[in-house]
Length: 249
Image (cartoon, rainbow, N blue to C red; front, top):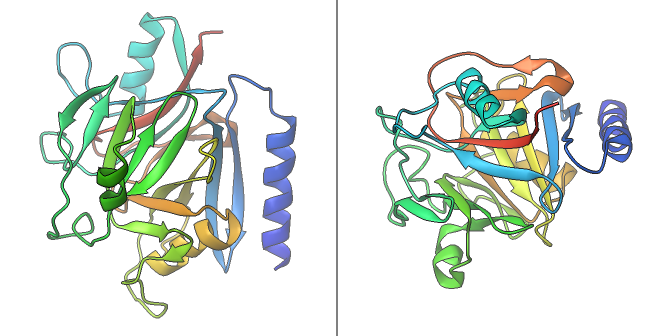
């Protein structure tokens, strides 16, 4: 409990002291014996969007490649994280929308792997807001997403853990995910620093970050770019990337 309160205090202090624009608050956080990095983005203040390929259609694959491309446009990378599952050619598995253009349709049927462990969901970035939707709810509501990426499974659905998650599961991986506040203003990105179960990871979003909906992004390609905490992860080439950019300093 002492570690949890300490982690929350650090997170709150960092976010409270951060500049109003061009800043993302990231802090280590301990919960239930597991270690995480949690980053908060204010969707009303920050330029948050998805990136997958450059103008020639070549997938960025790495944070460093995206950072170089942004520099040509006078922008800098403030925060980034892998943002959804993809095929070998780095094309998205499910819905993918970039700058209002739908590159891949919604997949609502069950299937193999974590993506097909229904219910899955969609992270949708609108104008001055961002929300996680369970896929069937997304299809009913048809929100206007400037950017969207589908992944699965959902971690938290209307305040409840995914019904397939087991407290005594032995499946442990480094995992990352995203959750959003009910008003769409606050977006929380989290990545574990040690291997965790789905149940443990989902409880971080429900019990600590207290978001009504949260979505799993990946467990094999979980990477973070957050210079605030000294992270610029390397590894296998990624598919979609969610990033916050700022004018180059």
